[in-house]
Length: 155
Image (cartoon, rainbow, N blue to C red; front, side, top):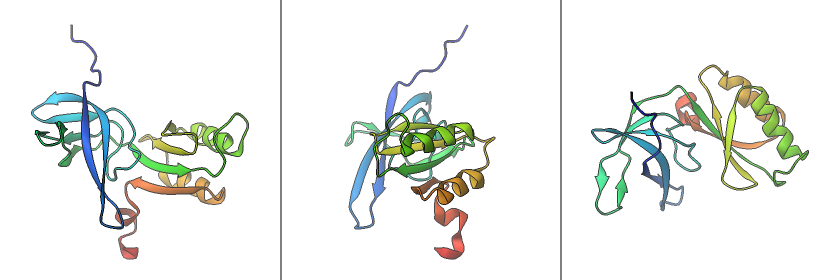
């Protein structure tokens, strides 16, 4: 009998900022062997990767973690991030927005009470989620797929 996989590593992602600086995010992951890892949480800063994607990340002696190189297999999950002006509290507009996203089939993970990474599973319509966020004047961004991927004519 095989045991279920549990996160056993953190994979390091380097995120290039608009000003040229690089920020680092580490995501929980499960080692699959051969420098492959299945991502086990939603990214708050990294782009082009989502929950349950399999990535190639050889161990970096310099960083002390496996360091992301590329995506091996997409899970079908997509990621948007939402920034709230009002902290998430019961019955607040922020909470209502999150509950509406859950009703659409999404899940979420909060970095704090104002910044949330929203997972959009394969069976949920990305356009429906994006339209909901636009119609409700949310502050949000596409993280995976990135806006430039969906709209290369605007890049």
